[in-house]
Length: 97
Image (cartoon, rainbow, N blue to C red; front, side):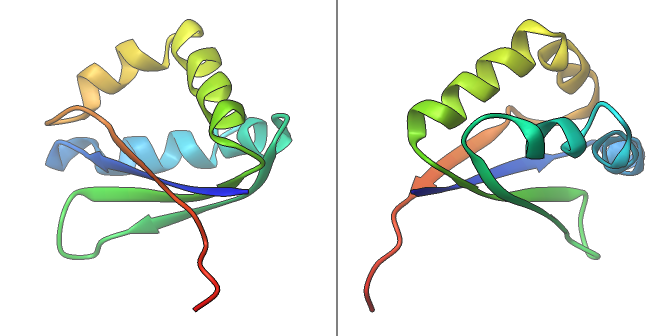
């Protein structure tokens, strides 16, 4: 299992649009049903336009397949209009500490 942290630095007037999309029928409902997705939670900063997704996946390959599927279905173009900087994705392993 891996943890993926996706950081979306939204344009100030687009943050709520992004949150609404995530909550809609094409958003995280489909993500949660995607093969390999164990968990996805949304984190929204009250002091900025940043939205983060905390995600648990079976593997990096599962997450990357999911991202590829989203990009092939138009998410990249939508994000270009909403974000002030490119999407950031970092991967982490859980430790025994």
